[in-house]
Length: 392
Image 1 (cartoon, rainbow, N blue to C red):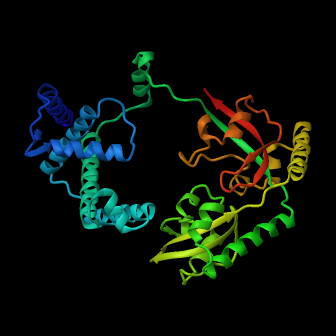
Image 2 (cartoon, helix red, strand yellow):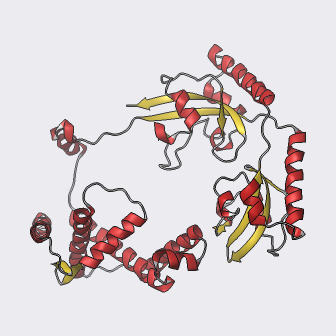
Image 3 (spheres, helix red, strand yellow):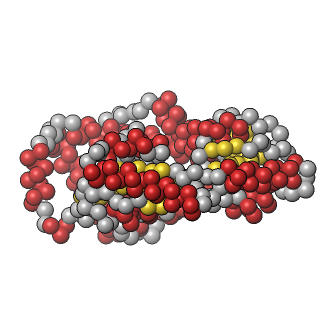
C-alpha cells in the first residue's frame, strides 16, 4: 500500500509538471494542484525574493521556481487529505524569531517594513504560513517514507551504478591546526591611541564635533565606519563582552562613553537607542599598531617552539598550550569552520595567509612562522600551522 501511494503521488507530480511545461501559460493561474491554484504573481514574488537575497540556484528561475512551488503544493494537498496539522504555538514562536532576526539585521521595524514593502503584521502572517507549510510538508514526507528501509549496501550499489560524469565535484578540503603568538604592543603606543580617543570624546561632548563624522574619518572598523560608526540593533550576546557591558549601561545619547578595551582594540561609544534586549549605538575603534621589532621577536619565539617540535621534544598538539588563540587552544589547535561547524575547510574558506601556507604542505608537515592579520581586529599576529589531512 505504501509503495502504491508513493507511485500515485509521483505520477500526480509528473502530470502536473508536464502540464506546466507544455502550456507555460501567461494567464494568471499557472496550474492547479487539487483545489489550490498556483498564481503567476506567486511565482514572480518568489523569484523576486530569491533575487533580493542573492540566492544561488542553477537553471532558469521561471522553470525552477514553479517546479519547487508545484512540489510544495502537492505535499500540502496530501497534507489536507491526511488532515495533518502542526502545533500553532511552535508556528508563532518561529515566525517571531524570524521577525526579530530581520529587525536585528536591518536595525529597526521601520527599516524591515521599508525593505520588504510590507507591514510587520503582514510579514508575520507570511512567515507563519511559511513555517506552517514547511512543517506540514515534512510530516507528509516522513509519513510517505516511514516504512522504506535502505541499507548501506543499497546505497553503495546505487552510487556505483551512476555514470562518473554525473557526480558533482566536491572541492578539496583540509583540516588544519594553528598556534599563534600576539606581539607585545608598547605602552606608549597604547597611550597614544587612548589620547586620540579622549580628544574625540571631548569634542563630541562639548558640541564641537559630530560623532558620526569622526567615525567616518578616523574609525578603523571597516564594517561600521562608512555608516558613521553605527552598529545597527544587536543583542548583548552578539557583542564583545567588554563592549556590551559599557554600551548597555549608557543612557544619554548626547554623551560619549569612557574608553573601552576589547579584543578588537580600543573604543568610544555613543548610544543611539535601546529596544528591550537590543541596542543600536555608534563607536570609533582605534587599534595600536605592532612595531616591526616586536613582530620579529614573536616570529623568533615561535620558530624556537617549531624547532622543539621538529626535534620531537613535544608534539604540535602539546605545543598548543602556548598558543594565544583562545578559539583553538582548548581544541589542541584545531581550527573550526564557522560556516559548517566542522574542522574541515575548503581552501577559499581559510584566512588568506593560512591558505597560502597550507597549499605548500603535505599532511603532517608544519609551516614556518608567518605574520597574519587577525580575522577580528586589526593587530598583526604571528602564527604557524600544521596540515592534519587533505581530502582531495
